Every structure is written in structure tokens, then in C-alpha cells.
Image (cartoon, rainbow, N blue to C red; front, side, top):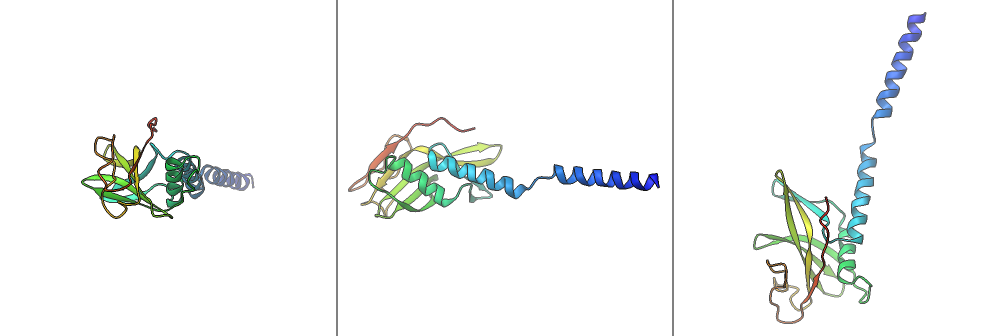
Length: 168
């Protein structure tokens, strides 16, 4: 009889340990995803927004958070009531950029910097963006390789430069 209770107790104890030590990974992923989205919305510059694996770009934050981060970068005090509705990562001349489209026809192109950590390539938002309506359909008004200017554009082209502390 004692053996039976001992076996039951051990089984109960083992079950308790197994279930208490396991974590709900989806909950943890939701929390870390929410944290990542909030960081990008508040300060997109220097933020890691994507990884490249096997040549495929994988976003690490939501498109809505990227759009909100670009809005806060380009119009931080909401002076112009900018609203970005689409963002995508593009490659121009072997460099990656975030191309964001606003509701009023403005196109903002933001330099993405590559970070290579043991073969894992991450794309971080650089500190320079170029915004234009006139060059929205071309590769004009794009951050130059020197990270100090925008490429030429016949028409409007506004440069936004923001410094940042790299994230770990």
C-alpha cells in the first residue's frame, strides 16, 4: 500500500515539475513581438526590422509598427499629419532600403544597414531618410552611399538625418 502511494506521489511530483517548467512559447513570442513593435514605433532609427535568411527577407516587426515608426521619424510632432500606409524593403544597387508610402503621395526611402552576426544578416534602420513626391516613381531621392545626402531628384526632396545609439 505504501508503495502505491509513493508511486502516485512521485508521478504527481514529476508531472508537476514537467508542467511548471514548460513555458507557453507563443505567449513569450507575443510579448517579445509586442515589445519589438513598441520600440520601432517609438524610435525606428537603429531598430532591427528584418532578417535575411537563405536570400529571403523576414520582417521582425509588424508593418503597422514600421509605418508608425516612419511617421514619427519624418513628422515627430505631427505637424503635417502624415500617415504612412505601406512599407516594403527594396534593393537598389546592392543596398537595402525601406520604401514607405504616405496617404498624400509622399514616398520616404530610408537606408537599411546590414549587420552580419555569424552569418545571420539583420537589417537595421539607418539614420538617413529621403522624402519626395516628385520622385515617388523613380530611384531619385534615395539616401546616398555616403549616408550624408540624397541622390538627385528633379523636384522636391527632403532629407531627414537622425543619430542613434546602436541596439544590442
